[in-house]
Length: 178
Image (cartoon, rainbow, N blue to C red):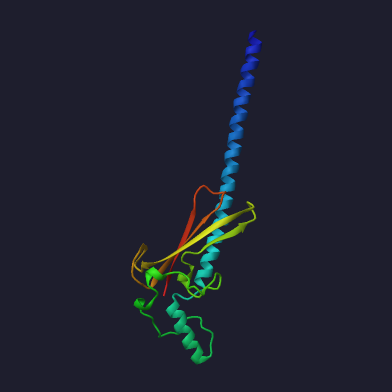
């Protein structure tokens, strides 16, 4: 082989390595873009579910009391009128958080009915479903990240969403107060 052939072979090898590096970069960028789109879809689904939770009363006791007050005044029970407060000790005990046997999603009436909810939601972008799980716990109203084992005036709702397009589970949480 002459020097001309070695230079040509070296040039082709260099072009092959550059092409391979460019393809890796494109593939990595595309993969990151797909994961970002999956995360956006997961965040949207989690936020939608948290909006559903927010539309419910704080606790079953509050829902019942609001219904009693509304029945006497002929109004729709949306919550307690000003001046009627509930003691946290009257709320659903932590070990009983979750839906009653007669309640079915999406017809829950209070926040803790969502505890233990597991549902799937179709994701048209990936032609796959989002796996959604919800946990509800009482938290210290002054330290909202700290779960407690007694009834308080604050409940933390955590929505975990996973789909095949993501490497990890997305968790979004919100604290609701009485």
